[in-house]
Length: 218
Length: 298
Image (tube, rainbow over all chains, first blue to last red; front, side):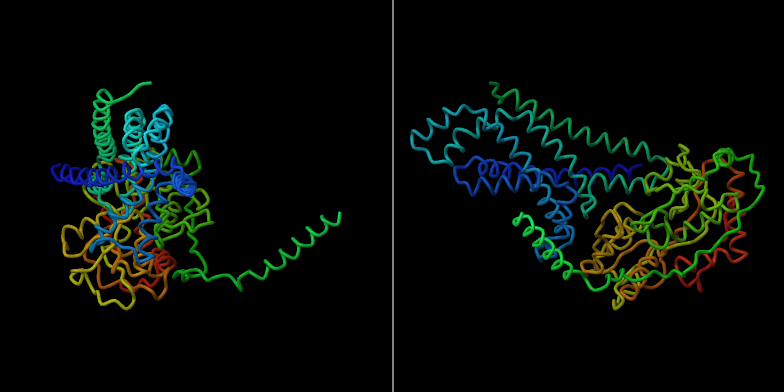
């Protein structure tokens, strides 16, 4: 029993490390993509629109396949060990995929900011990056906190796909536990679901607190 | 009208030009397997009566025996893309057992099972028996019964044909690939921590990595490795001797002793009259040096 708990704990740690790195990456990536989507330069707009269309409509398993098997084919590797390499590549796939959803969510947030604000910012001479950075994005982020929370919780569950590509996380722990204890398969599946539920509830709570303090309702 | 005929002529010429792009002949499959041309036939027993077994009664009245098998392990239980029935040593054992229970091969319904759902399927009656590289161990015996073993596999290594790795002690500093969560993977982590373990969700990804040289060895039960070595003729070899013991058994619903005795009888009979060897040589190749296990009637 102690061994099972040990396996689940190290699996949860694996999931949380994937989640943490992807969280930072996708918020950054999503912001950049959203900025590109609303930028005055048509090239940037077109590139971002094409990227989001392609990657958002590809299943995450395929995106991860391309990253984990395709990038090494082009001799792009990270880190000296296979474990670090797979970790980074899985994170790249997750960030690339989740950024699209964050970007689309942010874009709808940007649309809620009254256009007069952007016009006033231009009128006082602020360049585009500062209009976004000081005026529009802070308001946009605060408006879309609820759907952003959903995207982040979905990303937490998507990390399970990395277990098929050499990342030892919660699903790996579950598979190992089932192999060891074939007599309690259903309880093990329920335990895994419970851990994901717990992590998602915690994230949901964090977003609840953030919403209470920050959300702008128009 | 002239424009229409120009278009038709143009597309016809275009199509003709495209036919030149066809390949000469079809590409060869990645090596032919070690299979002979004809599948062994097993005589179906007549007048079988196992009324003490609820599972057998139900299957008999339905006219179908549901057998859980793997469908992604070459040599043991594998469905080729495009074919509708699985093939392999496990499938042959299932056919031998079904024949002894009175079911012809076309009365068998093959249900795909993966490692995680073998016990639940037997407990819920989704399948009547499981022949799916099912290792006998004490935890599983708490919830299902086992007939057999019908083959004692062991963990082994698949390496490139020109590799120097001869056994698990040569693994220090190399990369070894296996399936996530499986017993061989856990064994490598526990016993050979100097080897770097890479895990994927299917063996085929491991074998692809071995082909490209990203990993130095693939580890799992030697029967599965033999299947891959036979499929990719000449590229790989199974290194050395197995270093663990994994007895494969036929999984049966718990406490169905009549069925278990019947399946054990069938397995023993097949080992005595040569059908076991026939099935082995049809699916896994040369059986010289392979020991037939004795069934365990616990």
